Length: 317
Ligand SMILES: Nc1ncnc2c1ncn2[C@@H]1O[C@H](COP(=O)(O)OP(=O)(O)OP(=O)(O)O)[C@@H](O)[C@H]1O
Image 1 (cartoon, rainbow, N blue to C red):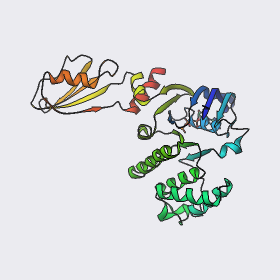
Image 2 (image 1 turned 90 degrees about the vertical axis):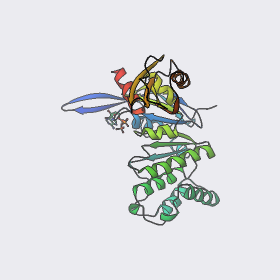
Image 3 (image 1 turned 180 degrees about the vertical axis):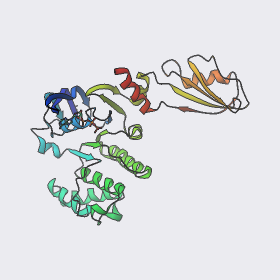
Image 4 (image 1 turned 30 degrees about the vertical axis):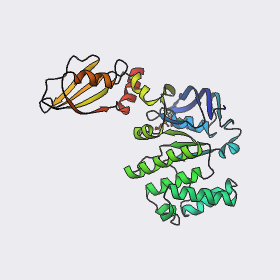
């Protein structure tokens, strides 16, 4: 199968002024990655790590200094027009809607640009208006919309032509909890219904947890991790935590294989045990505890992803 995105040694340098001198900055440094159709990939990294520069090369806005890139089987710079028909891009901090027009008018203009037939335009607009709950403010000039309303309209605009690949740059930035949830649910449904490939950059780990089955971590232009989310925790030795509610006050649960006793509350009625997910499982730890005490309830806390990413950066310094 043809990859949706394929890069080899993709590199982009900039020359920046540093007082009177000039200095070369390598924003993206030898990126080699392949993303298959239908994947949902989180592209994460600190400020200045190289995420936006990568996206600009994937979409043909920037020419690579070195290396190759194909997006939807096309060369982004050379085939930029053809590529635009297959890709939708959403920038959380930049609008592609006409500010003084109602979103409905922007959709009409975009449908014309993408040369959608009248029937396709109607069906797709109806679908997006329903799924993104746009009906109440379709006729309102965009400048009067709230941020959450505008973002939903932005997403509809970027997806109007049913692109195979949707690239979202910080799509949930500044949104309240409910708006974030709505947007994430929409993206999940869009992917399920249309097999859309999602690539999103975000500083919000909730986006990655809810939406993505693969994570790429970029650090100073270089790929620092490529894999699934649980694996990200394991690479840094981050621990999972078993929280146990016991039937009776109990001494600290120490000495259980591959665990570390973290805390006891209420005379040992609630205890927290950290365990290394490589060395044991929650079930094994639970069974060992159950031999010592009656367990009423338990939960497993996963490693905090932001903490995991911080650890990755720290380990590479
Ligand atoms: N046009 C440019 N000219 C000079 N340097 C640039 C240019 N664009 C990006 N850079 C530099 O390249 C590096 C990567 O920037 P980039 O915007 O890709 O990072 P990012 O991961 O998207 O950051 P953020 O999360 O802050 O958006 C930074 O050091 C940045 O200063």
